[in-house]
Length: 313
Image 1 (cartoon, one colour):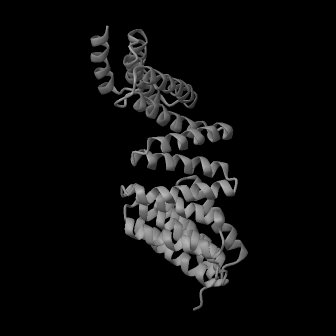
Image 2: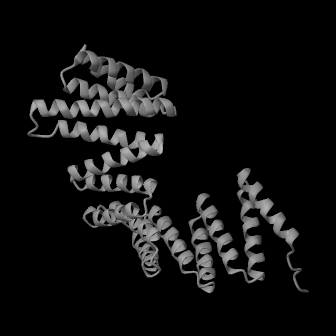
Image 3: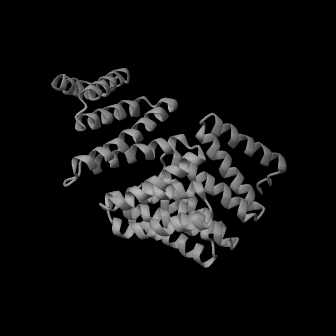
């Protein structure tokens, strides 16, 4: 007997099943729905739709921790993109596989896929794709501790975001550049990248991203203040910059309801005040941090702070 062909009604039912399954976190139902949609598209020889459903299915498998099935579905989606001769979709799929392999710490394979995606983007004159895959390839080298190889890739990705006037992408890539430069010991380069990223994040109204970068910048200012050979007057300037960054981050953390970051920030501010010789404010910050840690039921740092407070008081 021949299998009954799927109808428009079957399509609507499968779409509804996928949507409901994702809403209810009923992943087996959503997976079954995506497989049905892929079969329907295959029967219609609609390779673009089949590949799209398989790509979504791959991401769903990855979300639930099934890497093997995720990669298998990506391979099937790649076959569809190649059958449809859709090079940009092929590049996107290759890049997604590369990112997943990077997260799985399979770095050699990740570089292979990301380089393949980058090659297609270059062939197709796709500057947006080039920037994405360069940025992700740079992160692989950062994971491997090869920051000298990562930094030029980050710089190229930043340049492409500028050319495309992609402000959000630029802010993210500047942050990655700053992290890479910091890990490479290039403090001045990191500082410039973080400061520009922060200006962009303020304009974008991205409080979460802004809080993250401001906290890092505060730590960097404090590190500069404590560097060997720094004069007392220079150190005081850098410490003042650190406190300003921490205060703004503290206000953002309160707005975001981030209790853990609040405690960490207050502790960092206490350390800066203590290094500046301001025992009064150091005690206030440390006491507030201790109370914040207790409120978050994080007793270890709270106990450690109690000893510090006792030594200052």
